[in-house]
Length: 257
Image 1 (tube, rainbow, N blue to C red):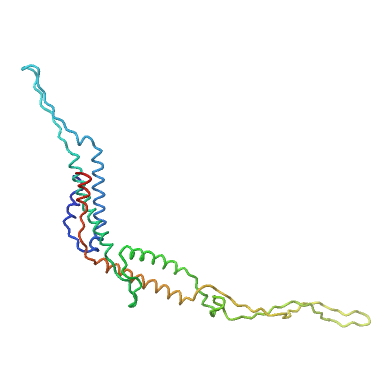
Image 2 (image 1 turned 180 degrees about the vertical axis):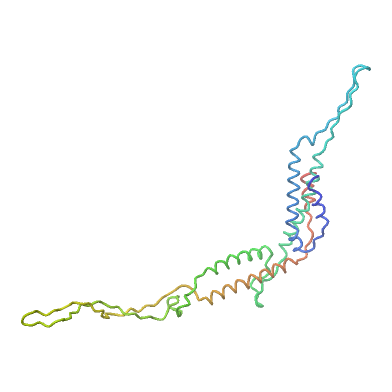
């Protein structure tokens, strides 16, 4: 039947380590899916399951002699079920072997000689890898302090602050300018102008909840270091020697026998 040949070839491969199973799993899934799809379409072609044998006998000895007609059955349900079982069995067994191994294959996540996570199973290590990608994206977006200013940490308010900067506040005050003194014939000529007079001082202190660039870079380095340790642990766990699980035979014996 269509779809069984490649599955059978894969069945000949002996897998002894978890990483070998992971490497071929997608190919086995793909081939099994293609084969089952082909079987599904075959099952709907009723004509393939039908045959006929027809012979003609004349009523009289001198009657016409007509050739027999026959159409062979091209597909039988038992054979289709057997082919489906063949195509799916390797997938069922490989998946079982992988999942049973995943439950047993573990490794420690170690950073600079310090164990961060003990005996982590492969699915959890995969989870950590994905989460650390998201955490790195988050950390990369954290705001940082303006490097053009000098900042000190204010323990009382849990924020950074700049050193005080003072600026003066001025106010325009009207002044009189006597252009010409008064005489017995003319009054004094006076012009009004405004003068900026300092009336106070502003003291400005900028505050920020951001972090220094050096701190952000430190956080990113920690995320990257842990991500590398998790990847190493996963690769180590994937070296786990597996026991070949074969539940497919019992499953399909129950389903199709």
